[in-house]
Length: 116
Image 1 (tube, one colour):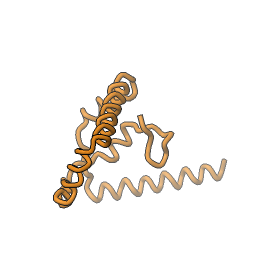
Image 2 (cartoon, helix red, strand yellow):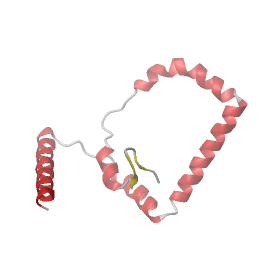
Image 3 (cartoon, helix red, strand yellow):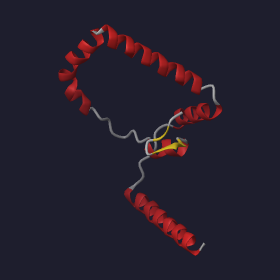
Image 4 (cartoon, helix red, strand yellow):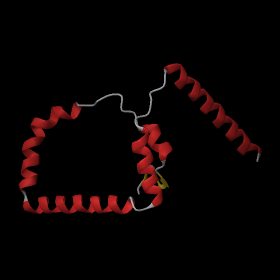
């Protein structure tokens, strides 16, 4: 299982998933590039070497996923993530309230470290 992008030793847990699992806007912007990318993709797929490497990489990823799902932490993260659905977008006032609470908590932690 991979870690966080900027902290590769920190595992991804359910809190990480909840913080990023907003499915409230469908992004179709990639469709604009389809006409330009289709011929390039076709060329790559027709190259025997690239096609073979692609197939090996897909197989490797599938094996890794199957292996991870035999491990307790990875399995429970996966199961909980698919059970919980999308994260609710909070109202602006609620977001502001949580942000102010976060800043207060961080100030308190900083002050406690200075006293220690």
